[in-house]
Length: 228
Image (cartoon, rainbow, N blue to C red; front, side, top):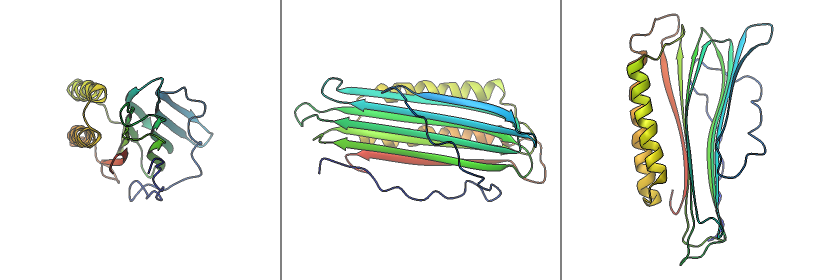
C-alpha cells in the first residue's frame, strides 16, 4: 500500500488537575517545507496571565529532494499563569520515490513547557503524522514529544539542568541527521525522551510545594513508515 495516514485518536487530559479551556489556535499555517516553526508568548487578558506555545516541524521528501530531516528542541519557560495553551506537532511526508531510489523524511519535535500556578487551566495538544504518497520503500518518521512541567511557584532551571538539556538537544540533532532505519531511530528518540523526563523530574524534586504537587507529564506521539 503506497498511501498511508494513521487514524487520529482523541487526546486525553494532560493531568488530573488540568482542565481543557476553549479551542487552541489551529495549527501553524503556511509553514515552509522542512522548516521548524516556533511561537511562544505570554499575555494578560484582564483576568490574569495566559501563556501560548506552539512548535511545528514539517519535512517533505520527493524525487527532487530525496532526504529531508529536521528537528526542534524548544524550552518554553513561563512564570505564573492562569491559563496555558501548548501545541507540539511533527509532520513528515515522502512522495513519488521508487524502491530503487527511495526517499527519507524525518521530523522530530521536542517541546518542554514550564508553567506555575494553582489550578491553572491547561489546553495541551501533541500530535504527529507520517504520510507516504506513492512512495515505495521510503523511510518516513514523525515524532512529537511534549513535556509539561507544572509547579505551584515558578521553577528556575539551574545551569546544570540546562547543560543536560543542551546535551540531549545535541544528540537529537545527530540522531535526526543519521541514516538509521526508522525503527532504530524511533527507539533512540524514545531513549532521549526518557532522559528528558528524568532530567525534569530531578529539576522539580526540590521545587516549592503548594496545594498542588509539582508534576512532569510527557506526551509521546510517533508515526512512521514502514511500521508503527
